[in-house]
Image (cartoon, rainbow, N blue to C red; front, top):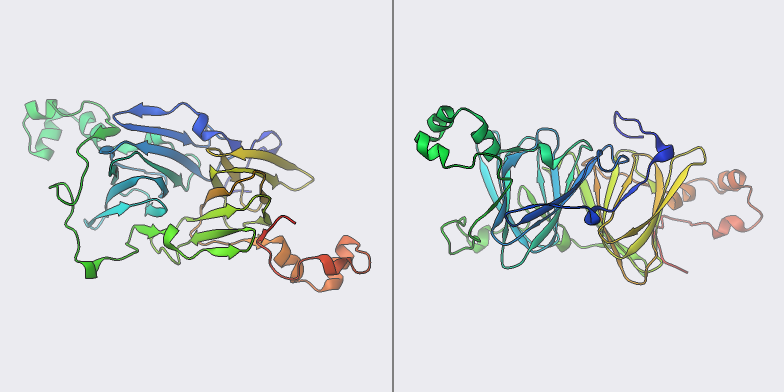
Length: 354
């Protein structure tokens, strides 16, 4: 079902109540994670819900076993990243923006503005864990003091005053364009909507299905650096159905931002698992497994979806059936005369409630 992995599907749940878990908390930040250790079904993808207070920073760090794709839900945040060629990049993000950091690239994340920033991190490896991230304070405090002193140009006394263990979160001054902490504001003519590591997903014109909902999708085609991951935001009107479909090239990881939903995951041989979701829950679908998402509430259901492939591929049931000669479908389902005319004649994608 998943890339280079197998699972015992008979005992798995494809739902994890992420926001109900106890958070890791210190110095103005909280984090809740869902790796395969916490969420056994999620073999191919892991995720983290992180909140930072203004000025609080997820310290300089890197991930050795996964790339990072993120979506900002609320607040504002600044990131920095260094590339192997020595170039560094600083970007500012608002709600609806996406970032992507390749595996092994050092980066930081700091909340700006005056309110808490909440964002979802998605990693292309189910074995990823925030607890095993490489942090700069942990690195410096773990080597012999004389090595740190030589490398940083400090005295041993000054090294002794540095953090003596991983900081993980660090509180600081909220950066703004007037402070010495901020990068220079570009000339208006130099401002670009999409940067190397930033894609403004919410600014994208959505795919709209009248009465059913909408989708915004970003892949490596629109966001070239995001070679290993794609993502979308799906909004379903009450009663609407994201039709039965599957993804032949990627696992799917879902974070329910708002509303209520039902999802079933079809695992072949008559095996199907149905789950009910609320805001703050996480869902997972193995690569190739059939599934649907239905809004079961009376408000819009908004879902963030991540895929562990930079290319988005989906096979939707309506389009598949409509693409066959009618006699093939009639024979396959044993249809009576006239019933084939009730089947979809083209791709549905989202089906409004009738």
